[in-house]
Image (cartoon, rainbow, N blue to C red):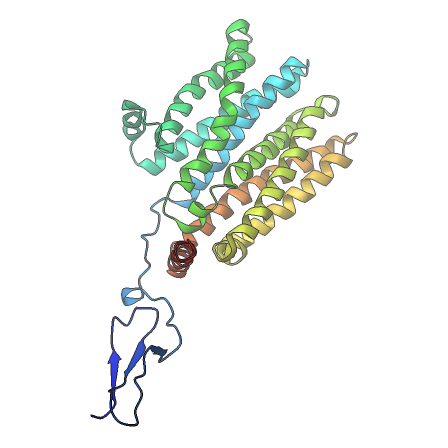
Length: 340
C-alpha cells in the first residue's frame, strides 16, 4: 500500500492550513505521525474586507465636544468652590459662570447627537447602576441645577445662601461629571477605548483639571490665580503621565493614538499642555503670559479629547485591532490551562 498524503482543507480564514502525513504499515516502512505546516500563518481577514465592528454612530463635533465640555464644567465647579473658600472671589466668579456655560454646551452637544430632546428625558425614566449612560444622565440632571443656581446667584447677586449651596453641591458632583465619560466610552466594544479602561479616567480627570485651571488663568487677576495655576499644572502632569502609560500598556491598540488624525491631535494636545504649563509657571507676575498659558491648556484639553475620540473610531475600522487581541487572550488562556 502506497504512502498517501491527506490535505486538510478548511476555511481559508483560519490561521493556517496543515498537511497530515499518514504512513501505512508494511515491510521496510515506518508509520509517520504528526502535522506539518504547509504555509505560514495566514493574516487575519474579514468577509469581503469589511470591518468586524460597526463604526460608532457618534459624530465627532457633538460627542468630542460633549466629552471636553462636560469635563471642563465639572472641574470648574470644584475649583470654584475652593476659590470661594479661600476668598478669591473673582476667580470663583469666572469659574462658576464658565462651568454653567460649559454645561450648557455639553447638554446641547449631547441632545444634538441624540436627535430629539425627549430622548435625554427618556433616559431618566430608570436608573441602571451598571450603565454608564444611565448614571451619567442622572449625574447631569443633578449637577445642572446646582451649577446653574451657583452661576445665577453670582451674576445677579441675589439669593446668596442658595448660591453658596449650589456651589457646594456642584463641587461635590463635579469630579464625577468630569470622569464618567471615560467609563461611558470604555464600556463600548470599540477596541482602543475598551482596552484603555484603566487609564482613561485619569486621563479625563487630569485633562478636565488642566482645562479648568486654564479657564481660571484666563478670567482671574494674577493675584488670585494661584489655585488655578496649581490645578492646571497638576492636571496637565496627570494627563500626560496617564496618556503615556496608556499608550505603553495598550501596545498594538495604541497604534491609532500614534498615527492618523487621532495621533496628530494627541501630539498637538501634549505640546499645548506642556507649553501651557510652562507659561502658567513662568507667568506668575504677567497677566498676558498667564492668559496665554490658560488658552494653551484649554486648547490642549480639546485636542486630547478629540484625539482619543478619533483614535477610537479609527480602531473600529481595521479588523486587526479586534482580531489580534482576541487571539492573544485565547492563546494566553490556553497556555494557562495547559500549565495547570
